[in-house]
Length: 583
Image 1 (cartoon, rainbow, N blue to C red):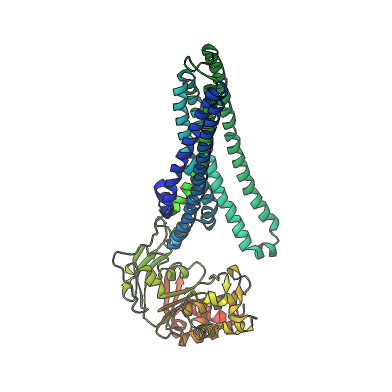
Image 2: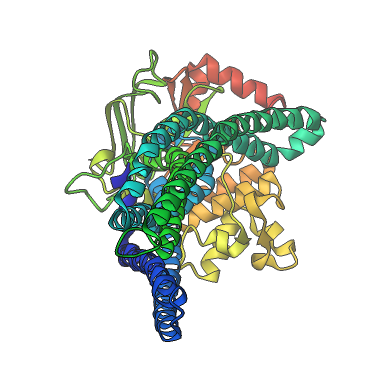
């Protein structure tokens, strides 16, 4: 896990390495200061020598100034390194998600990915910043303070070792108990984000069905669960304070008693034993040791909390896409020929039943193929195999005479345009959304693609036409307008294979007919696959596939299927009577 996360440090490695050096310098100065103060008291104030007072005061000012410099630099570099590390983590996770296949994305929910990109990275960033400074500072401070304390008085310094096991065991137990609780907290953060995302996305449905109270109750239930888990963890962590206080007060009492006894015995004579200045420095060192221990205990808590986040982040970074490009990939798709040979497919390799079973079909380059079938017949699953959004479980699928697994994935997908029924528009202008299909498209090409997709009419009616802004998710355009913009975007790609997956379902039959007529003459060399619930959308196709339960049960032209297929004939006649066509 740590090795995985460290790969995201990159250009901030130098700052991360220099920060501990600055911290070490700060600690060294802080250790020297009490020794100077002891000398100031014993050699200047006690004897009444102003020359020694001035001398040691100057030393004190110098070392405090150097300590301040090291402190400022360590803080500055620590913040810079941790912020950069977090930025790289966000970039790496986002880039990793972009490389995932649909199978990988199915493994992580959208809400979970968002939580890892935001909340989890924030915890890891904070922990990393703390680690750069305090993980070095606290042990170093404690070690140096102990060494100097032993050099001043062995008996007093030795007493600290009596308290260390008590503190270590107490903190260890607290960490062991709280880690699983924090892990549950972050899991439920995923659920909370999922509820919020689902509610906001479907807010129109929520309001139309008057289910606001139900959604509020669902949110409240998960929110209360997170509250209870956090409260439980914090109540356990609260025992850290008593453990630290018992250790601190116990140690101070021991130092006070032993120190006073030693000073009385030596008569404050440096040659005979402990002096007032040395006792003062011992108190300072004791405070430094105790503060260091307190910091270490807090570090344990922070690391325990951030560890759950670090594990979740590393899970995504270590996840390998189920779709891999070979060592010598083919980078050119020659044509739009598609051949399925004994293709089986299942979303889960251990599934008892295949989603697609025994698919055998050849689609010649430039052909138009229609696919009909009821809900759940696996029409979408079939076409999603062509651009390698998923890989076949068994059999083979070739495009342009080459197995899709032998292509460079980017090259394959650049040759294929897939328009889904629920395709997405992004925040930006209509022009910016269309340029996703071809960033170098001219205005003439954009307008022509929109005419083919029958989108030009409503665009021209908008106040700013192609500069009209689309809200996130395309909420300010209708479903039919969104589908037509998505078709135009795909056409600008000038693909060798165009797949329309029920992408005219939200437009009326007349508009659908105009789109199909325009597509027939647009990109004549491109292979076109049209999935639809309407016979009218596919009746002019070169061949029509009828799917049922993951199989191709009928295949032929419109006339052939009318003559031979009872399924097709019944569907055609029912729609001719006005059933589906008028909806």
